[in-house]
Image (cartoon, rainbow, N blue to C red; front, side, top):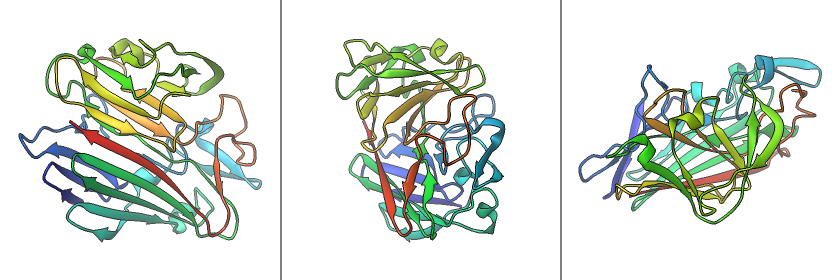
Length: 290
């Protein structure tokens, strides 16, 4: 089921399947920012990642001597979220542990996603709570796709501009789509700009650590833009499928998958967040639209 929130600037549609952003439109002219899915390229729009970001080797991980299946980016995107609160400009939706989720993730939890509009800003609060009696391991992230170009020009006319000057490190990705464990400095134009081209994504996405915690998709040929801030996520990824796909995903992640060949036992897996029983963790993401 689709739900709508809006204010004087924007109208946002959210799907209860995966609590997925479905549409973000300007109220003056109805410009659509959100990629609308296309089987020729990528069918999704803005899936959320929980309890893992990225792939698990062999789609199997282990915990306390037992093995569990897990697909890419976890299972939350394929589950129906219940609506906890719905107002004109905000909505909160929750996924709770169930018999179904425990077959692939043997923990009790709640995962609440809150979307709230304030002028031309859309805040996303991803909140995980441990309702179990044992520590809860997880990762969380967002995977929103945006039309590129947004309104004019070609894909190559658009670029990413970080909010601060930095020299991030790029994580090398193997042909199988896993980290190799190698990183290298990723030089940005003037320390802030990454110009887009389709060939950047011939192998996989670009995944950076040590970058500024905000980035803007913009073009010198347009006054439209999207700024994404992710103060709680140490990693940022940029991706589209191979070829000349007319969209770009901007992906803040709390953690990265294991290096290819490393253990997928949760006791050894790096980059997991761990919550003690009864505790919670919030991850904030904000989108600004021009």
